[in-house]
Image 1 (cartoon, rainbow over the protein chains, first blue to last red):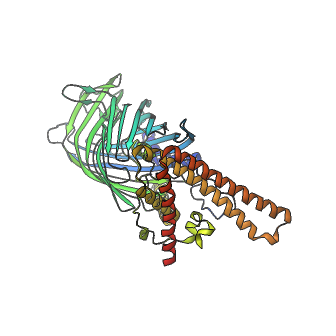
Image 2: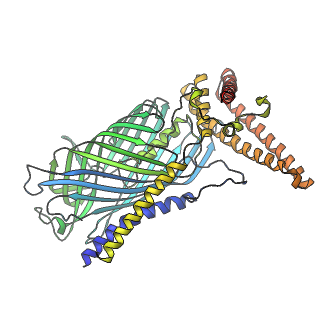
Length: 409
Length: 151
């Protein structure tokens, strides 16, 4: 009875979390989402913010497949659903000492609710593990092509049996981005991340949660560009018309979650009385297409091959390192991911401001809650074709501000 | 079907209907305005005509965007006061005088803004490039007017 109640409660928790995210995003921005603006005689002020609040919903899954070499975990599949938001809390713009450059500070709140459902024999089909994160980020544009970015995402990890208290962990990223020119930029920083689950091992070194961040971009962010961001992503990004964009990418995805020992007591050396840390990481190689039909709504679909899939089950944790009592590597599988995002309100115009483009790229690339999946769409404006014939629907009312009266005669 | 299952199914159905309606409304309502498109075209037109260095572009475009936003806000105020003057017959002498004074204050503010932007441009760009900027703005307006005439 108690179990049925907690399971039911957990199922209800996710839509509730989505509603909370929506509420927070709207309240923080101080505007009603569905309030259609009528013509007003009040003076319209210029927008103060550069970054519009965003709420998003992303899904990811790999089908259940058999694992031939294993006699305990004979099959494995994975499903994930996450809902999150980011919203600007404070924005300030200054004129630098040289009296020309504009620097700006952006403080944002971010949050994420993640529900994952691994599928393997012995584990109840309705078993879920959850991560709830609420954090913040700070973006400082020096005005000289430099962007300081800091993201802090504390999160609580628990499962839907709630037989053990949740574990509080935190991840963070601090990095400096230099926009050298429209065509080139680089990034240097450090991160604490559980993106590689219980850790990432090479032949000579074992990475714990602390990782360097090194990256570079070749090409314009509003066009076709190559982005190499160790360890988060390597991608070739392109735009298809004014509403679509795509990318060919390789990136890791994963995390560390809490399982109750009782739910996996069929694994050898499991302490059935205690919590088990379930770690996973895999490398996604695939394609992603984003579609942004208007100012508010965006969606994406992504598919490809998930390779180097690692699972670890551990009960000992020391300084971020997890000692697995059971680990396995699984053969590649196809994956499917999709998502929707809504962005609200008005923002300052940033046409050709490439440092701010990099700030947008950083902000959308770091989804809340230590996730490595960007919300659908992009805040970076399109580079228009300068042929005026493309502005076929020009109406005088839209452009009257451009002209003085004498110019019309 | 238990009450909790029924409630959950009902909740999911309502959430799905709400989400689809929301997406539909957002897609139908929120297209980028043609004004934004024109502003983007203008920026591209200026960028094409002036050979900015990387450092110049980095400083110029944030300044330009800031200037445009401020000028746009002033223009909106100005047109608002003009709209009010159209209803002059319904207003008192004192109110009309205040509106006219307000109009001149806003025009002066716009001029001050332009002078300030001009000064900043001179600190950043060569005189030749500043002249090219003004010429580009003018050329763009001419092209846009021709486009309107052809409609």
